Length: 336
Image (cartoon, rainbow, N blue to C red; front, side):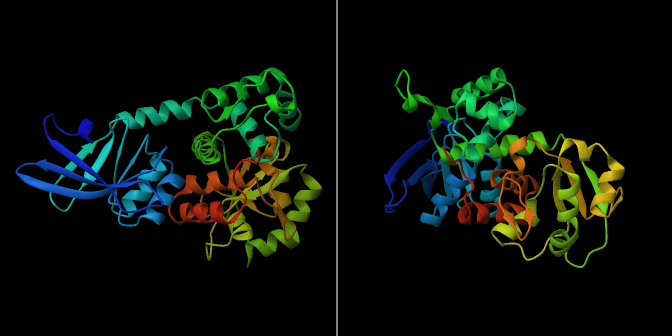
């Protein structure tokens, strides 16, 4: 708190009364007045960390954490709460007149952290989400990337402190393991959404009364005949797995590279026309081999749930709420 205030401003802290999470009363004497608020500690500062804190202590006005992520900031802003983190980033606006705005450095930190992720790291991470042990051999076999790329990707995930090796030189107990499942999912989702935003998309329009019924009876059987791998993601997928949204407009679909590269065959397979706007289908090439390894619901292949979660967060708005609901009601996190 002192680090984001002018030098010499008096800050006092008392423990809060909430037992379930760390909270504390903050007293700041500035400008001849006393400013008081309830603060809470949200650990790493990912959206899940912040939501758990506020759920346990809804009176918290300002959230503290190591690095408050952009998704967590957006969530806090919609609920009229502020934040302070260890990078020096702060957004405090109290009714007593205390205003602290310090931004910029955190954005650079977020970009630096996200830029560390490569497509092979995404593939290795999705292998872990799919239940593949985080070993070089297992990841190589599951993802189809080379042994060297698998080793490099796992080493980078370890460097980000998402995986760790126990202090055992060899044997089955010496393999890497997930350090913090929540942090792993949050960092993956941020990086996956950023990399996905750079991938080409095909927009299609077709007539249907109910998109999920059309997929079940027409589109899914046609895709199974034409494509080796495909899956729906985003809002439509969340409705099948953990219904939260009452309706959605666009169905997001992944198909394999071969079908994605053949535009005429793709349009014929899904019974749609290519359009620039007014589309009801968004089609992208599968990011990794494991992106399609989610559950099958009513004959419809759903993407890996971690990928669905990331795609929902990327859209934002009500889709972000659907992402949180999916995370709370389905097995989205890493399985190792």
